[in-house]
Image (cartoon, rainbow over all chains, first blue to last red):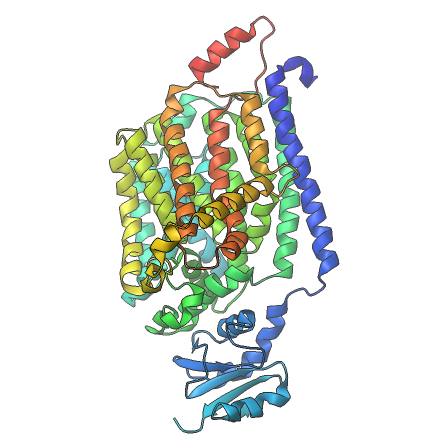
Length: 139
Length: 470
């Protein structure tokens, strides 16, 4: 019916847009199946944020604190560092440990005290989930 | 009630502003859909600026937008005597919509439903958005919301240089405003914001081209935009490139309407939209400069005063932010200037940019053939029409989009970061910023598919198209 009523250019133009729409349906469907197959974690950062709830309550309302981690600093593992800042805002988290208060975000809880001592810090509070508040021994 | 304030206040400000500046009938007409979508986008941008002004002034943060709403409301009441829809006057809505248009509208609806399903699915998986959303926009929103007094300015320090404290604040300020009204942080605010701008692009495209070129061409253009999966995934990731794409499209749509109907009001709205692009991302500043220059060259500064009158009040807070709050950008700051000349003269960087740009253009969509290639084939098949009424906006639009593309190339060339990584992580999003604008220009420029009358020859149809423009 359309072929009878519309000239060739019009039919071609409509066909191209409909082809585009069909390809989009295929892409969206394949995207859905690929992502569903490759990753089962719904969202990493929401679960992570709860680890920082206790330390947030202990931090001052504003200011800058340091950062220490066993997964490397901003250069080696920027995601973990950026997420720490995201969770602790509006306190500014500096990329180094040279501050009076320092947040420790560790993959292995056992090494917090060792790392802290090596940086001239003492453990103020260990939250038993890889997160700890450290304090500089001699400011 | 609170949720109502979060959404209704921006919608009321924007819609009334568009009805006041652009033409509007006393009651409502079908063209109010275009005014509503445009108005909500503009209202969101203006409320975001009002929140920022409230923070800087240290006053009740809703005071500036209540004052703005009052001013816009008074403007509409004063304008009521001359109320009338210029779109309705120019072309009354058709009595009967052809079956093909209904079929295309049905296809558009189904595709948008699928897009919405994918959007919702991505949002459930990543409620905090993608990397840029939480590391830049929502992080800044947290600083604006959580910090009391003047402490929100702590979020704009060199220690946070990795999170780009020089980026403008449309998204963070609006998200913080929503949280403030809600009384707590909720990912529903940035998700709703992303949802509006993502689907608003398709709505604005369809409704604006529906006015300018007829319902069928508008629906086809909406279909082309709805058939871009990358837009909907990135929208759900809450990235700022989608709102910028909306404002680039809004600038072009308002300019097209302003040129066609000789409307100073819509030229002013184009200025507001272009300036709000600059409040969304730094690339928006580039777009603002590009469209200003393109209009100056191509239109002999016609409607330029109205454009600037709309833009300047929106630009004022942006200039204040850039001068007093934001840190130096990584390109033009002290660190960025080191080795800039060497980077600008390095032929390997030019080659890499050209090669990667071509690769991303060919794979954009992502569709089997690349969306840009499909659009080019569409233009070739449909053919360009000759219509003097749209000449200014088409010429200035193409020039502005080209200048912006060249500007992106220059930023890649000069930015002191690993170029391969930079191109790999951002080229698709930069293309996304321009994509709705390009689709708009293409569908405005091309012939619309129409039924030839049995007794009329093809030559007559072409002659009619060149005269009438439909």
